Image (cartoon, rainbow, N blue to C red; front, side):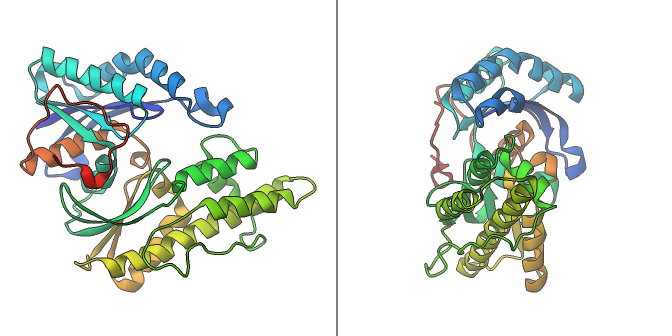
Length: 343
């Protein structure tokens, strides 16, 4: 089975060809990503209208490149898939209309895929991760813990009550005058910072469950910045290191709680989403898994951010699990919680 997939939910226009090879190394035949980071950097974040227009400008070229790199044509792929939500409505419409048109004209089945499901199944695209497992999905738009029992079988254990983790990174980076996207910028300069210089209170320590919150961390960071007469490069590095430390501590503390809340006590902990690329977070979770003698799995860095390969793989996983293809009348869903994924 070969799937042509399109991802356009935010500021990356991506197309990929993915197959259901038994060998994970052979599953991604192509994965073309055109980023809009340079376009949105001057605004300090993604502007939805600008993102939608940029998707329109490049989507045809991206699809052509993906097919060419894979050595395929539209007639040789078996399924066409696209992200239906959640995401920015303008970008979602560009990808969905394009994918539906290609599917209809070439008489191919169409799959409308949940963007979050694409992220959470990415580790299974790259490695043979068995069900059940515990997932931390941390990205620019979402942050939650989920017990994964199978394809389409997701139990949310806890989630952010305010900002997503990646959103908090972006906002703090903007406070510090760093470039967008904030996560990589903060991680880069934090390497030269003193993570103990600025003190934070760990959020929600006295609250049961594994919900998380980043609003207090952001406010504390703003207070730290305001306490300085000037903001030197070393100040930025120290604040970045201290902020990153508290975010990682908060997430890993609640990850331990989430594991205790699982029914299956799985042998795998999985992390996905853009924040999963953060090396400090990966190292901290690796330490937890080593102590519990369970496996830790994270996608390769290049597959942590939004990409079409994860959408194509989610389509394959759903079809192999017996889910039907989607109607061409299916609509985009800017808000589409993972626990409402099945009809």
